[in-house]
Amino acid sequence: MILRVLRPERAAGGSGAGHRRTAHRDLTDSLPEREDGWASLLHMIEIRGLTKRYGDVTAVDGLSFDVRPGVVTGFLGPNGAGKTSTMRMVLGLDRPTSGSATIGGRRYADMPTPLREVGALLDAHAVHPYRSAVNHLLTLARSNGIGRGRVEEVLGLVGLADVAGRRPAGFSLGMKQRLGIAAALLGDPGVVLLDEPVNGLDPEGIRWIRGLTRDLAAEGRTILLSSHLMSEMALTADHLVVVGRGRLLADTGLDAFVRSAARETVVVRTPGARRLATLLEEAGATVRHGAGDELLVTGMSSAAVGDVAGAHGVVLHELTPRRASLEEPYLELTGDSADFASAAARPAARSESEAGAATTTASMTTSGAAR
Image (cartoon, rainbow, N blue to C red):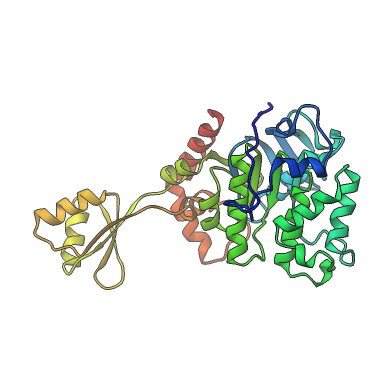
């Protein structure tokens, strides 16, 4: 599958100039012409029955899913779930035990100039510590027919232009992450894979990554992004692929995942908290007491809570529906798949997941298959 799009021109000082590339004519000074244009590189990542075993350990177990152009696909799972192993097989760094991982129907190893088709950041420390940042990128660029102009361009894009002559041995983790992202974007690829790209970044850097990935997807590129920061993933991803112990748990849109796997909570504050709690429980709601006069109500809409309070003359100081966060359904779904959960967290996650995890897994994967 090839998605063809036209790339917009951008003025040098325009909105988003710090996050997006400059005008298209600047790129042609750095990269050789392509017969069918830049958009021909926008390919779908296709994972089919992917399995990887290391001795007796099965890291990836029969995974099948697609990563489509034009959206940010979040790749989630506990530590040891198989996310990095899957990405490594997509990039040809590990050989699958069985199954396949292709981009536009091709293996990464079959691409003549891979940096111009696929960009990736898997390990920010994977740089020569005593080769300057600019020389590190120049080495990569020359191996793929990319000019020096593009190297200078991506150094400016990631905010490292002023330290281009410094060696990464003296870089912070955040600076190394930026250098790795520069390398990933060096060939102006249509497919980008980023494994935990916000590690070590300050709040400004995290916000920059969010804007960058969404902008790249808006241009029609294919973006696969892994992270353990649920709050950030909720702001960045359009679609989610969730894995646990190497198996697919969910493949669905972000909003559908949150709606289907978690219950809405209504926050109520009232001087008659005890009386209202009894009334709501009699009406079928589940009520937990919060701090002071606060009640946390599930199993009943905010309108229904207000109706019960009004019918019995209970004064309300607050009635707020609280939308479930991404973290809640994620923990519910992966509770039995976390190999390294703390002793306190593991029983709670399992008890919450017993009622709905199996149904959630089935509905999420079915939703993905139907896309």
